[in-house]
Amino acid sequence: MSQQHSASATTPGEEIVLVHVAMITMGAVVASAGALWLAGAQWLVDRHVIVAAHLDPLLVIPGTGGAGLDLARVFIGAGVLLAVMVVATSWVANRVRLQRVEG
Image (cartoon, rainbow, N blue to C red; front, side):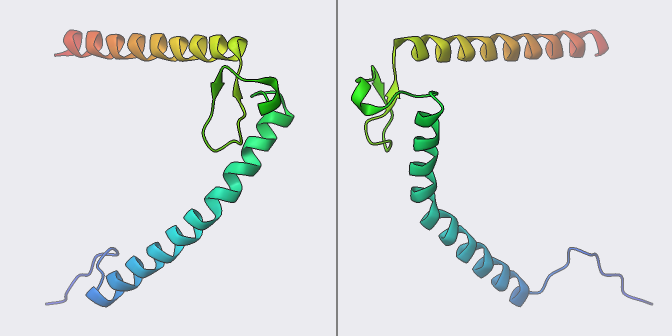
């Protein structure tokens, strides 16, 4: 009889190596996250997605050095959130209706 091995079969040693690689990768991502966050916040301010701290935003976003959203951007964000909720609710209702018709 021949033994069949699946492609996903791993030894305990290989699993330990994968855990170590994942931990090192996550460490590198977390270490660079702060720098990427600040650069991303500055990019958003430069493109007028959020307002700079000196313009006294209504809603300050933590970790951006005081930058945030003014009233117009709060309304835009609320509208986008409402639109996403309407689309998601419609999709779920449609799926439930289709399941009732099929089953």
